[in-house]
Every structure is written in C-alpha cells, then in structure tokens.
Length: 226
Image (cartoon, rainbow, N blue to C red; front, top):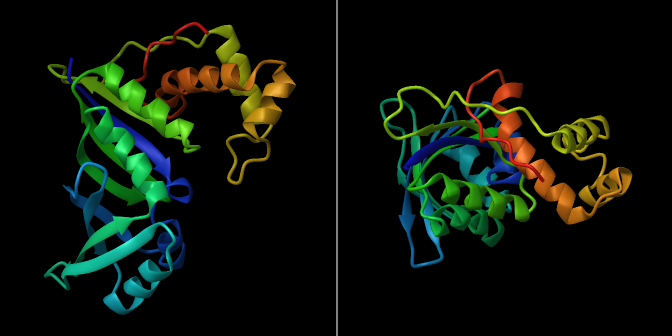
C-alpha cells in the first residue's frame, strides 16, 4: 500500500552543512528535484533570510555542493531560487530514494535537521531505501509514517524486543548518537559481544520503532525480532 513518510537527517551528515553553519538564520526549502539522466538529480531550492552576497560564497565553499546557479532572486518575500548540483556523496544518498521508487513531496531544513516527506508505492520500498541510506553511514529517523486511505498516522507501535532495547540503551549511554559520535559501531558491537552486522541490523530495526515514541509522536514500523 502507498506509504508517505517523514524522515529526518542531520545537516552534518547530509547536504549544506557548512552553508547552514556559516548562515545560522538561513531557511531552506526544496521546490522540486529535476532528473539529469538516470543517476543525477538537481534540486531546485528556495533560500530565505539571506542575501546573494552572503549565500553564494557559502555555497561555493560547501563541499557538498558541486555547482549552483541562480534562477530567481529577491522575490516579494525576499527569497532566492537556485538550482544545485550536489556532490557524489550526497547524490548517492538521494539516489537511494529514487532507486526504490520513492517520490519527494517536500524537503526543508529546520534546526539543523533536514526533514524529508517522501512517498513510496509500498512500505517495503521505504524500508529498503532507509536501509541503503544507513549503509552509507547516514543516520536517519523515521518520524512519521501513514498509509494511503488513513487520516491519521499509524497507531500501531510495537515495543522493542529485548535485544533491541539493550542495543539502543547501550548505544545511547556510550555516545553513539552524539555529534560527533563517542563510539563507533564496531566498538559498540564489541561491548555487546555481537557482530558488527548484527548490531547494525538491530539498531536499524529498533530505530524505526523508537523514533516516533521517543519524539512523542505516533508512527513507527512494527518491531521485528532479530
């Protein structure tokens, strides 16, 4: 069944991190994404609370941006409209969405976080896209998820399994979720006496269940045993 999900990614682990750091009042909203062949995409982005003289040097110095071109400037609302070309590292994360049939509905930056609203034909494709993004070393939170025909976010939230609870709790205590991380996945796996792959899968599954609950927002994937 068609699934719409709201995902959150830290700017530090995705795109425009240095631009946002240099311009703390900057607001960013992606209007749409243009395909440039089977493997390249170019987002069309609105920037506000900034002038061109400050924005373009920041974009030029940002390693996540390969190219940029202004399309519109200084609208009645004081916004600037640009076409960007991300670096290959960021582009590979974006391709995880499209290669699994995802469609971008809305993207914006707020409080140092990218929030992406995406549509997938099936929930399994959403899960596969999230897994592929995490395999690239990017942490992603599934904040909300709703299936077509439902007016509210999914109400079914399962408790974590005992191994998932242990992994999440230890990861938190050891600083795995800190920025920067205080412990690597390999080190944490050694602490728990399990394999790197087993811990990665355990945290990934637990994260989908836990994100909504920890944020006091409904909506997460059913817990699955390890």
